Image (cartoon, rainbow, N blue to C red; front, side, top):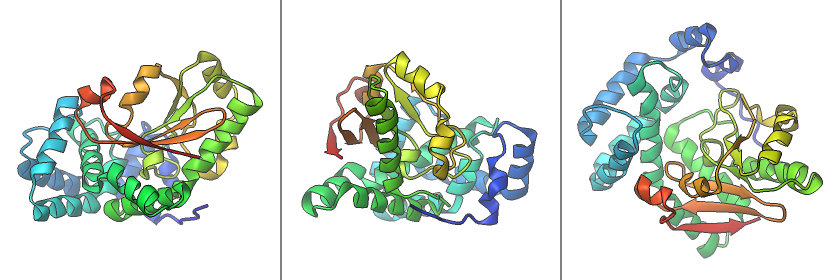
Length: 279
């Protein structure tokens, strides 16, 4: 279990409610908005974006345009990510749309740069690395690229999955699956300011989770929130669009899916291939 100690910039003050005045004051004191705006301008110039938004069409263009960059240009973009990712993540609750949406563009570039599906295949199939070690190394690679104070290890994702599986699917015999996705399972969650993104496909399971003190059950991970939400089964296939690792918790098995890259419409229609690894 990771016991990373945060720099003062990301210490316990960061646990303030994201929409509160106190959080806004914290951001003003610790985050350089000018640096972020400068980075956005450089990004827009190299990638050819007049504006930054989070529409699927724009994010699809991130994938297409990043693929067309020369290797030195890709390295330049990764240096930009490393320079401002932490500040951009803390600004994701900003009322300024372009700043808020910039994080999604950075996340998309990181996923494209790492070629996550191929890397997992190399580690697990060719090198025969266990899934927990592979997850730890994946998180380490994300941390190296983002220079972010992430307090979790990849194996913590699997510990969380096992705990949810035991509590709700095995002990209480509730219908699964429980689907974990987003920042937490892709090495981008910050202690205290990030929630646990996970959904369930059955209302009974959602209600049981809401009636459980999941923050206490997962207290060593220090989430800002750990409540599930209801999703449709067909939505699962689209959850790997930006963050390619999706963990599907079933009663008797935990499936780690790693999706390939493709346009949003292909993800929504289930046409994007994925590799599955089991625990």
